[in-house]
Length: 141
Image 1 (cartoon, rainbow, N blue to C red):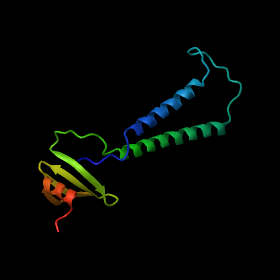
Image 2 (image 1 turned 30 degrees about the horizontal axis):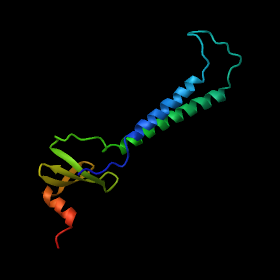
Image 3 (image 1 turned 180 degrees about the vertical axis):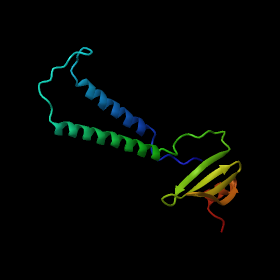
Image 4 (image 1 turned 90 degrees about the vertical axis):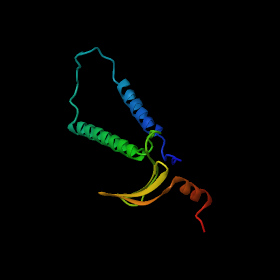
């Protein structure tokens, strides 16, 4: 049984579509000219206006990069796994800033492992049927 994903992968595609729509709208505002037609300029723009435009563009690009990184980090475990894989991640829980506990299905057994920075340790192992029985009916008294 796989845990349900927290976020839908459609969120990333929605963000990309929004970015494409916004950039298409900005390109449509430009006047139509023939290729390599000389452009007459009447005045030189103020240096502060150019600096503000460059700064705003930089902030938008950095914001898009950080948003994409955040989305990819949230969707890390959402990608589909092959059904023929010998090791399947059943569940994963973060217990610290760089520590987590992972429940793996290896053949007919389930193995609980602890993953920390620089180490991986087996915490518990049991048959898969015993785990499902415990989850459905509760622990034995």
